[in-house]
Image (tube, one colour):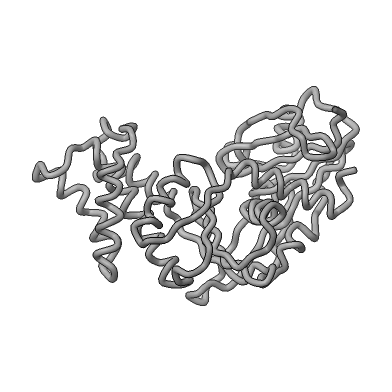
Length: 304
């Protein structure tokens, strides 16, 4: 099959690029460093992109999403305001400064969240577009867990609003840079029972300050009530449980829920939602991203 388009998700941590046929079939895949590693100037990012896709056809366009379009990325692609039609996600593409290949960058989304504060997403909106392309545009609550978890309310084919939580980043900070987790336990395997205990605590202690709950991991170890290897999973359960509790308080538990993301992390959110009696479907994050990028490329006339 002849290659027709390069699509990519370029975040802070890593870059993923796919060489695709015109119908979206993946012909090759590459991974590289994220923008946080390269954060300097546009020329450095352009050079990194050229290295990433070296050997791929030079005469086909590329469409990128993620923080590559942030103010510190290749080119600032701005944000589209919510509410916005799912079908309009990816409109307003900007072109990266290149000497040859046409490289387009998708804008992110912004809204005013339930607390009256500005909120943003950059990259996850393409996963939303991909999910909608495959599942239609139902009333739904879509959660996209990751470094910054996004909870999005879809209604009548529109992204009404969303909110973000630093769930993944908070867990990483506590695991790697605090006394909550012993350094010998940082890479401990997932402990499902300890995770469930953390979720149950977050649910039972509604209204209790999250910081107070998190310290329990340290205290439990200090008195011998918890082995150090269980602490990371216990903390994860508290954080994800609090994340789920807040979202269900805001949006209710009646909407269909979809979890879009990496399999292991999505499974933890499914388990936490189940503690509230909420079932959810799971969608592979990479597949949703590719579907969204292809849908936007086709709508914009980039993909033949």
